[in-house]
Amino acid sequence: MAKLILSLDGMVLREFPLTKERTTIGRKSHNDIVIDNLAVSGEHAMIMTILNDSFLEDLGSTNGTLVNGQPIKKHFLQNNDVVELGKYKLKYASEAVAQADPTDFEKTMVLRAPPGTAPKPEAPKVPSVEASQPAAKNFGDTVVNPEMMHSQSTGGTLRDAARQATMTAPPPTPAPAAAAPQAAAAPAQPLAAPPPPAPAVTPAVAPGPAAAAAAAATATQPGVAAATGALGTIQILSGPSAGKELPLSKPLTTLGKPGVQVAVIAKRPQGYFITHVEGASFPVVNGRQLDAQAHALGDHDVIELAGVKMEFYLKPA
Amino acid sequence: MTDLGKALEMASATHTGMVRAHNEDSIGMDPNIGLAVLADGMGGYNAGEVASGIAVALITKETRDTVSRIPPYEKDREDGELTAAKILRNVSARANGSIFQAANSQPQYAGMGTTLVAALLCDNQITVAHVGDSRLYRLRDDKLAQLTRDHSLLQEQIDSGMITKEMARRSQNKNLVTRAVGIEPDVEADISTFDAREGDTYLLCSDGLNDMVEDEDIHLTLSSLGANLPLAANQLVQMANDNGGRDNISVILVRVKKPFPAARGWLSRLKTWFGKNGD
Image (cartoon, rainbow over all chains, first blue to last red; front, side, top):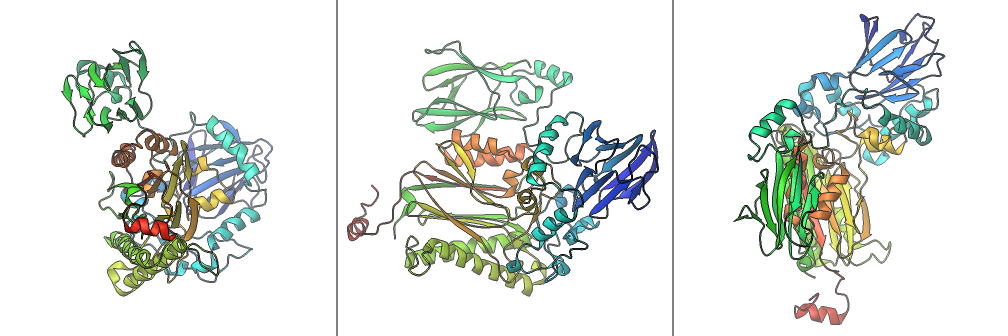
């Protein structure tokens, strides 16, 4: 369960668990989170929570809502986001990230709703799974909460619930048109925002002076290349393209002549690796012919491929 | 029955990943009948493996038995539906019943289920059945297209306009599917048929691939390593693992090397009889 930590001038005042689908924030006493300060509007903002995801929306407040220093209208909250209303700060902490055992947390589960219980218009209920309850041990072990069952054929109880949640939210909820500017706004913030909890999907390159120094000392040793931040580069040594350079910036770079002989160089966290792709003959590295296995490239290795000689080297970043 | 082995090349790879203790994915394929099946199981202990294993074994066997009796390229005289689609619907339902029964009769398997994506190629067409968040992609003319639409909470949120695809990548709700095989007495598989062309490459994968590897890099791998399908399959798994490998990763690649029209007329049947078809 995610929570908001309210603080003023660095002093923590209170914690609010996000237990409800809609959590309202404002100066008036009927709000779920009441901040009695004139800089805060009567109905200032709202947070919609669907399972492990929370969405913040400013309800047209006078002084606006900031997330990590940027004014927002709607925002998909990420762990450690800091929401500001006037002088007050609300830090968003997603416990799913902090506490769940990563081996269990992401296991695929089926999401279902109770049989025959169409979501009530008055109180649209977000379907829940048993495993989303705090007992992290049960993640993945329990696929189905019998109380949450609904017949497949009736279809889309969840969809209805989601739609209903959308419709019953007083301010227009993210319709496609509204979602678009939000998406456009999102990339503007990644520098200020903490790293998303989701796994990094691009190959991680970890530069650093120490690592770079280590690489300089062991430059001929394969396997350290990509980790240093140095960019692998191929320089053609023979043939009509002699002198040409080819930066190996993509995860995969193919070399050679299709149909004749092709090899691929993969850029991986632990270095650059060359592998034979097609053709009767295999690439030669430093005079030795490779087999079908991937071969780690070292700085200044000489590759012969389809009758062309080339050198692999690490260009300092 | 035509042998599609000459027109279709298939390769696969499956891996536990870097975090999980078990591989709950199962894969199966038979290039001769143009079938590829991939399932991502779920459930406690080893029940996930059991569920995905039942799905793949049953679907492979029953499809093989059926296409040897009934040509999958013919259309139903009444509803005009391709037999291949009927076959996949039937075998998906059978797999569902079988897993559901096992789950309800044996306590250690209670609640197990699996996702499913199955492709059956015949007569220059590909028919796909899917349940859950395992996917089918196609690379054609250097464009990557996702041919299936996940049955997942995220996909529903995207469809209703609540979140964008970009936001979905950062969601904490990635692991929730809204449909699975074996959880309820009946399941409805989504079934579609597309034309298949020479040069097409199809990718069936579990979410352990597409959650860890961007579409752009999947595209790059398929387009640069298409000449070596086993290498491409291993490369995809390696990329997912290099990016963290948080889930089991399975891929099946199908490459259409040449057209594979069904042998309909007496002449082509005769040619098939003499083993000359397609050469």
